[in-house]
Image (cartoon, rainbow, N blue to C red):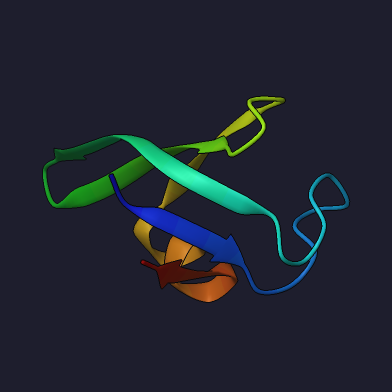
Length: 60
């Protein structure tokens, strides 16, 4: 399962360093969307590919 770490605070909701798991990826007519769930299961967010690249870094 892919894991991502937040590089900066995200819209005042999640703090820098929060770990997320990718629970869904979808693509429709060239637009990718990702659904990320926090490690402690307290929330999830839906992001575009650009937002994912701008705010998150993949970890292993």
